[in-house]
Length: 424
Image (cartoon, rainbow, N blue to C red; front, top):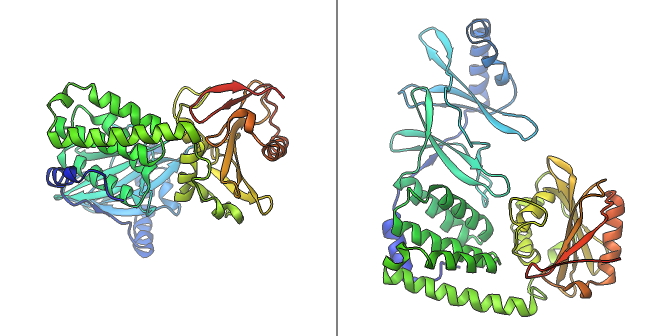
């Protein structure tokens, strides 16, 4: 579905034209083997000159690029590696200098660049980009939802880039994700980007981006977030000077959001989602479910649009996605299915979804294993607390026993984020 107001399309596509960014690819296995052989021949000299900085990471089977990473006019050998329990990105760079091999240090680290950027729809890894004769480094930043950063390496350091071309490129990627109905990813891509760079984005362009952001929130089912964004946008001084086309687009979207929110308050998400894809067991391989667009759509109709209870950072929907980072689907019978999983780097943080495929309703829970001090949090946009069915409680008890959940308190939150304690 295209972005809503037809008046805005002309403005966006004329004012957001941008240079093409080419995604650079690693060398072939044979080329990599030749480069590794060259480095091993020079290993003693490299270790003597640079010490631990040239630990033999490149001997592992990690990607290698031959690119002009520091934009000095000469290609370097760039090896990727991932370190620590979080798998954070680490680059090792070498250059041919005459008959010698030199290690190329980076004085100022790539602050915030944690991992390569993965296209949410295609899953293509994007780390090095080339545009207008320069090589850029791009990656993702953030814990729950990641946005893109862009760096340019010149001399012995990198600096963060946010120019008109990069702004337009983010808008183009947003449109691509939106058109593919990856609304949640589209929202976070542009929202986090606007939050980080709002002072560098020209005022009128930024207002159009904000309209895109609130519309993506609406399409993702985050009606309260969308309404909040409209209110914030209308309160801005710059909005008073906005073009008639933008003001008309905001008014249209505001009315649409308000109507949907009022309807949602009355009936929640009962009967609006097709759960049939959960009738079969789902591949439980790493991150498989978390990358499925259907799973993102499920979270959109399942989780109240509120910050995660008991958590200082992030929305509950995003926290549940992390709690189900490694998970699988288990049909119980011809009517019910469950999804159970845990946080990829914190196996004690677990998540659970129960759904009634026949009635098209669902409930979820997040908790901590072997920790009686941590409450068990339950939420649903389908039910109020007193409506929770016995079949859900039966499945919940089995899940609690399986994961040794000893929570002394159980808190339930309804579709509007109102919480009450369940006494059982």
